[in-house]
Length: 267
Ligand code: ADP
Image 1 (spheres, rainbow, N blue to C red):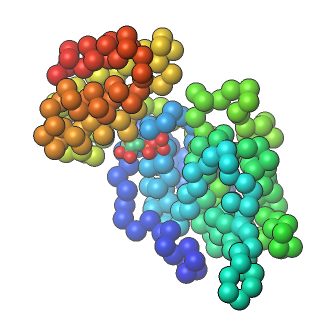
Image 2: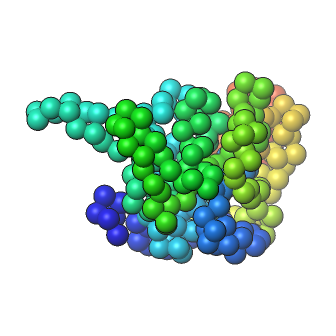
């Protein structure tokens, strides 16, 4: 493996609890180098899944958290000035394409559309990346694959992927895992007992029912892991749930009361 991407190798097996046939499907998608889109709410396991797949496939993983200030140069690369003059530096996308890594663009809708279009030539059968400023056409390494995550809840008329972008990808749907599986995950990640994990999942289920009735997003698996980690450090469950589950989710006093009440029915 090229030394420039060796640091991105996932050396330890990440804990990932499969929830369906996503591992097999992803492997098949990788085998044909299909660009993949992981869809689902924040904190439901998309990033962990990619880390696990990169480990399983033995490929380096280069992750980019997308935001609206990101430019095409942030992905592709730019000339830098140093003591010896100017020097080209590959951006994360170029690095991945050149040396055969999996490139994961997290929350891709956050990026502006003129930024996102740079991925187009890499996601059709050309598999090339033109570096316009450098006058180079990079042919993607055979191991290169592009993966993006996408939270359908956030999409709006202003912020969505164009059809011409979407249709380049295969997609897998992710959701919060069903109760027993989520309990297992929370317990494994934090060390809390199955009983405590089950109660946390119970609180989350109540909160998820409030989505669309005053809450934009439900309590994610990530938040349950936060709460569980505090409880495992002997923080009182009520305080842990308030800090890790209720307070981050909403500022609305009535909604906080309703969520606090849900917490007290379990703890
Ligand atoms: P996303 O990328 O969807 O926002 P993450 O992958 O970061 O979410 O998941 C948040 C946390 O939830 C992870 O760090 C992990 O602790 C836990 N998690 C969620 N789903 C799973 C799963 N299927 N297996 C293992 N851990 C999971």
